[in-house]
Image 1 (cartoon, rainbow, N blue to C red):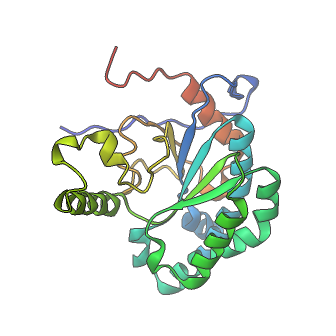
Image 2: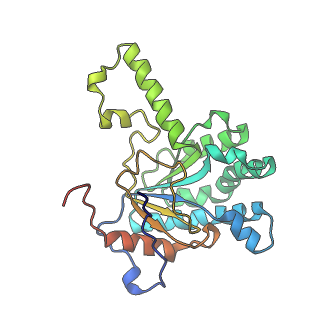
Image 3: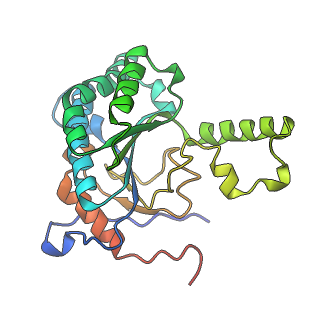
Length: 253
């Protein structure tokens, strides 16, 4: 038996679409999809879409902070993205340095803290250095946590967590009988973070694409046809407003 996730179209902005302070999702995750198609539609190279999409991040981070969101996790580069042409991969992995060069002062003014999840070890040095610098500069900020998923794949994350669980069991640091969902979550990249309350995906695709599979067990999904470079504060607030109309039952009544 197959099923399709509900598809939510974006609506025109109106006063009722402005989210109230009550029931704002603590943690919002976004699959920023559609950069390449945005560029193709304009007869531009794919990298132009990635550049345009990068500039949207600052506005959405500010909108999330102003709305009371505590954590914003962005799917920036997946473990599968290495399959793309080398020139495109190289360009994408230079964007963190460019983004932080331009926008870190503004993020500092808004008290944003930058973090990452994923396997950063295999990333280019210039990417790792830019990320490390941003983390160091913002480590004392206590506003919005802007969390970039870089070289992230949820299946790899879960397998890696499982291996470390087995190592701790073998080393007698952990009893297998003590292992439960809560303890297993501490072995994931997202240890210390709440699970996402709302996951947004742009560009009309309706799949998780190996993103936060464990963490999204009870996440609310919101999809839009809008390509990421055209995503804006009004559409983001529409998603928050839609989330506020839902009742999360977690399997209950």
